[in-house]
Length: 100
Length: 245
Image (cartoon, rainbow over all chains, first blue to last red):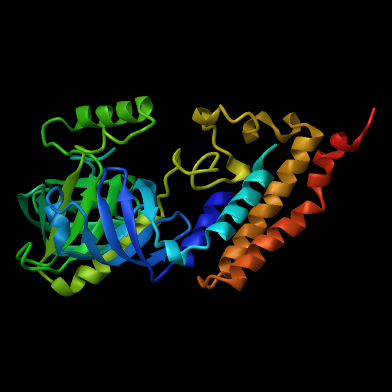
């Protein structure tokens, strides 16, 4: 497993139960509660709502979904739930260790 | 490949089969058939042999839909990240490949390339099993070429034993394919390789111990990573800096 991906796997696991917004590469944004994440950063959300229902009306009726990790562009996180300092430090360490 | 008209449903690795399931492709009903959730691909075929298969990497998301005010029946919703067209699937597949090659910021080309499929089983109680089976199979097909991931050299799985020749990543000078031979590395490179392998093993071990709860456990994991490595090759890398000539 790649190192930084392992880092974010652990990080997302710590956010299970929090509300996030997942923006996909096809511009669809999905609000929901983070139910689980796996090592490939596939994401399961519950209680979802779609931020662009006009474009994707079929998604309105969906409650829980599984999102393939590779189609995720961004994951928006609640600011007060993230220890950004810790995350920066951890990412910096991992990046330094990967450099030649 | 996205849409395969002539490939029959797989007979092995079938996690879930659901008969009496109607397929609705972009609003167009295809009638009743059987959904096969197999480890290799997702397929649906009616009794006459007409149907289609989907490769898991093309499935952006899937979900259970239970809100009857939006659609009159509970069903399994599947979003495919390509535009599926009955007439010109081959052309569409080529387009998809072309776009991936040319376009690093693939923001615009995927806007229009969406297909929404509904699988409506007669037995609504089966929806949870269908959903779970798809989740499991999706996890079996991680993306091999995920250029958007920060820090990933070649995507979701980095295995020194079979370091794939992902030549698209050639702009990272330190990347060395296993085929070139570990002996092609300098002594420093080999030491770094050993250290990385150790870190990978440790990262996996630490991941399994993570309970998904933040705070002290997370701190411990990051600190351990640093401590283990600081004493070895890092010092070696900085040796030259310490030497005064």
